[in-house]
Length: 478
Image 1 (cartoon, rainbow, N blue to C red):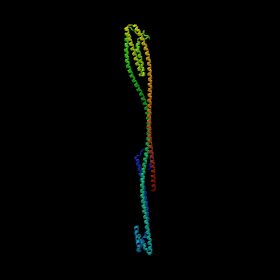
Image 2 (cartoon, rainbow, N blue to C red):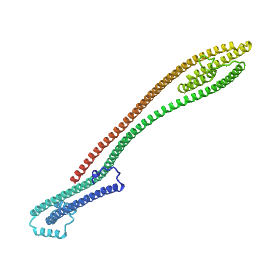
Image 3 (cartoon, rainbow, N blue to C red):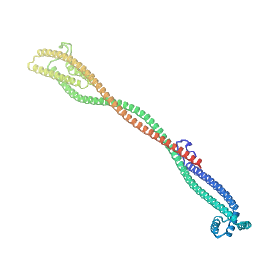
């Protein structure tokens, strides 16, 4: 089973595939163990066959020396006691070492020995020869037994070494399977880390894109907010000015109403005085006036002038603001004072004429006084017009100054707003740089971990190759 040839997928291996791999490894180990057991059995059968052949050969050699051994034994019985003890010892030794001798063999040896009876010298020589042969045979049997013992000991040692090698081989196979599993796990971890790295890179790109979109949206919202703030400030300022103008107009209206009521009272009183003058014979008409004006000049002084000034002052009030209220108040106060002076003069003239009764002289004085009053009123009217024009220009210049001041304030607010926006942008840039450095550190740490895992994977592959080489060497030695 070659675990290294598996594909480096991004998904975990299912448990069924893992169990199949382990079963394959165990089956392979079992097959190899059966092969080794069969080899052992074959070696044992071969050793048994060799041993049987050796035993057959030894049996044949033993059977070849049986005749000489029996003849020497019968001859030793007929000889003296001196040769009987070693013969008995040798017979006991031979009977102990050679249990397979038969009675027929002994009889044949006895028959041959009985036929030989030629003399003591020949018997002793045959006995010595047979003793030597038996000794050599015993030595050969001892050597065979030593060889067999050594063979069995070597076979036992070989069995022990084979069992040890099998145990080592099993351990090596188990460790190999474990290393394969670890290699697979490490490869899976490497693939998982690669997937995590790719996901982190995708998340980083997505977060950067979202940040750019949010930053653009923030800039748009901030610009719209600044515009709305400016519009709100302008509307608020306009509302404040409007409220102030309305309050001023209300106060002015109340004051105008009071002055108009007072003017109407003065007019009524003037009309009453004129009627009384007419009753006393004093007539103020166009023939007496020097500039061609009738007695309505007094009414013009009391009504037309203030009405005309009131319209001008209202226009100036709408265009300039609070600066023209003083002009209107002064104009109305001057008109009221003029009317009061005229009334006083008329009353004085009426009293003087009633006292003196000199109508003509009083009428001439009244004409002169009326002419003087008309001239003074014309001069005052021109002066009031000039003053109102100057006031209007002053109010206009003040409006321009206030507009310029508002522009300056607006520009200063824009500058402060742009400064705050720049500071916020710098803060955001610093935060983004810090986040970028953090992500770069995380990326470097992930790359370092990946390199460490690759290095450990390489070491594990090398160890696996070494273990495979050792296993192949052990198999070749067996």
